[in-house]
Length: 343
Length: 167
Image (cartoon, rainbow over all chains, first blue to last red; front, side, top):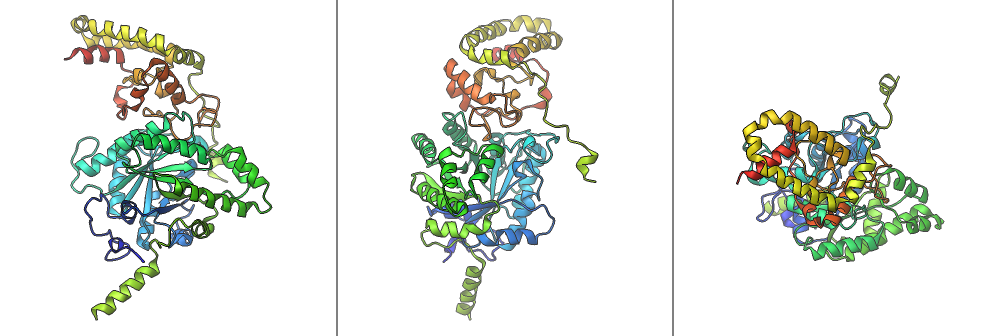
């Protein structure tokens, strides 16, 4: 059953404004109601064919509250995050648009924020971005005109003060729920909770963490964050995802910037007869441990090339506690009931 | 033919300044250097009337040249023209390949080295260590505004002499 606040005139239209909310999207409402949320992420296609996006997100429907469209993740070229988000909105999904500081300067970024909001984007994630050396165009010019904190500050200024960074007035400010990323597993570890606080002070309303495979390290980070009173000031979305095999885990650890996978995890996968199934089991256990950790509002699932296993993992973990996130047939059903009632 | 064959990649990016040993020495001795630097800043502020009499515009080029020489040697300074060394544990954030002035990115390796240059310690891991030595860890939490690219190459010393003397 969909919550009445989450139903708009059409699945693709912004929801009616609600007091205490900055955006007109579903994700902010689910989080503010205190429901444990699930978000996921797709890597946009290397294609101009919109059907490929529909095909990729289909397995998420009814299992996740929002879908991130990554912005050139790993510094690889793909369809743009804003275009993917606009296509997802047209289908009825709630996207989280990612903006990385690597590829655009402050002029382009602010223009994109206005454009994205005009297309119906309700959630924006502000990222520094992976270095160009990690991608398929290492000879590209890294821009990094803003950093993630300056980007958060900029979007908040655009939304709340109705001004560009230059001070020039915006006639229709972007109504967006703004987030950022944090990596609790990268050095300097003592500084990470303070950096989280810095991001919240700059305007972050939700925080997505890097993949969590190290529960004790995450628990230490969260304990420090709670000491600083941070979970009351922003929603923490803990990242996780299934590892396909021990070999894949080793490859990710060596090649994907910022992913910390303890040796014990790799040993556990190596010892399993069916490594893929063990990877999913491990992911389910991590999700359950994250949900039990005070201050975590949501799990953010990143399952590259294992998108079809999302439903199985979310179901097995029981994190939704029987709740069903938006699904197009639910809306169709409700509209049918309404029409009948009116007749 | 693939486009990459026509425009071959240049391979791994070259770091323009390979003088990291002294930069690291400076961070290791951040406490003493910071005290020296604070004294120097006071001297700069005291010199404001003198500088004003000579004319800041006339001083810009020679002072910037001296500043470049000193700070490049000690900190691998990139002359961004808006120095934040005192707020970053004396580790110059412009040495970060992403030019991050507000803290480390999420790509720092488990050994504390840079995501882009695996042989280089992360500037912000050093900044954290330097700030701990200086007792200025809280200053890392100050939000730094986005850089003003017009100031590249300008003297931060003259700026400090002038700005702080104003009130």
